[in-house]
Image 1 (cartoon, rainbow, N blue to C red):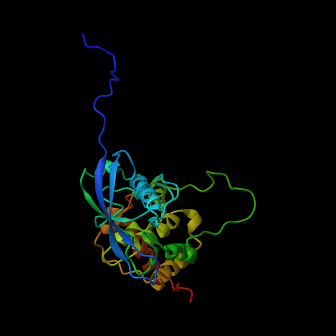
Image 2 (cartoon, rainbow, N blue to C red; image 1 turned 90 degrees about the vertical axis):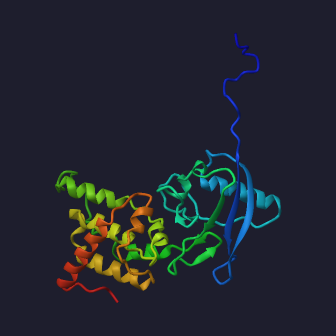
Image 3 (spheres, helix red, strand yellow; image 1 turned 120 degrees about the vertical axis):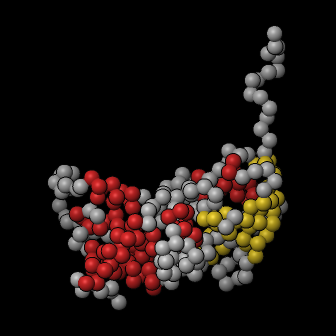
Length: 267
């Protein structure tokens, strides 16, 4: 009979991972940056990638060094704030947000390169943090609907075909993280813009501004300095919400229709 004394039944203790991190460090937008190598030890495979960066920053602070700046907020894959390029892939090896990527996706002894989003429209603020307000300005250019005053209408007053409702919802899941831009060789934001145009354009509430919306948002996208879309598809492959490139086809369809109807972007 096996003795139960000292036996917790948990088996051998899990061994943490030892990793080599090569992290992009840049003190500001006008300062030249470089990759700096750090070692972290005893990293649990159950940690998220951002928790691993927290461990690194605690280590740096204890050593009197400047912690690595990176964007984060909800850490639940909802807000779209987090985002870094990990070993050359936006958000890393899994199709998810950086905050939802877990260290079990890596192996003990791995070397990991960590860089910010790379796009002229996303200037670096510091280290891994970039300025993504260009996406906000694209939305401000047309990502809204007319809202009449008065009481809220009955929920079923305006029927919406289920297919349109489903496609609109799929497009609306975009969290604006910018992974599509970081993954695209042209640094295009077309998937982001298309998602915002599509989810409003498919619904009855979005029809009054439909033509103006698409021409103004595309014009603002061009003014921000994003690259052109060449349908490579890296954007959709990196999107943590799996938004389809079909949204880009819908945007192009709406844009051509709006231009034929005489819509012109605001100057």
